[in-house]
Image 1 (spheres, rainbow, N blue to C red):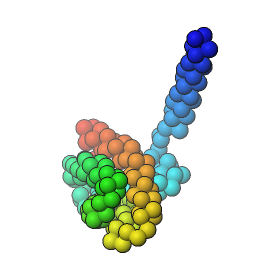
Image 2: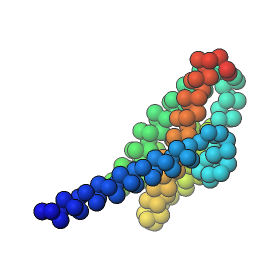
Image 3: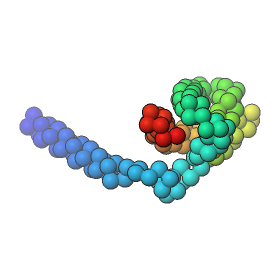
Length: 166
């Protein structure tokens, strides 16, 4: 019994040290300048609001609304994409990938759009299911990496709107 408590205490201590380490790493590596962070990280090199803001023609409300809609729909569609892949519903996988591509292109999410295009193409011919599953995993991972940056930009736009900086 004492051994179990000692092991449990050691495990808790290790968990706490890991938690402290990751919190320190997050604080130290927190993006202060989003453009610098994007250029250093391959996931974010392709992401830009320029095309969307050009379409919005300076209308901050439009840009905010489009980002909110994108996040809401992409969250749902990416989740459904994973589920459809798990249930071998390849037609639905292709449909969801096709649906996500235009929105990704407006946000210049080139890497994610490429994965989605490959998924759409490969979903029609599911002979290589392993490749298709890997593509879905890559697309989901890429989205989970870029999503926080979109949220940060959305909050920044909302703040700019309130402060009248736009």
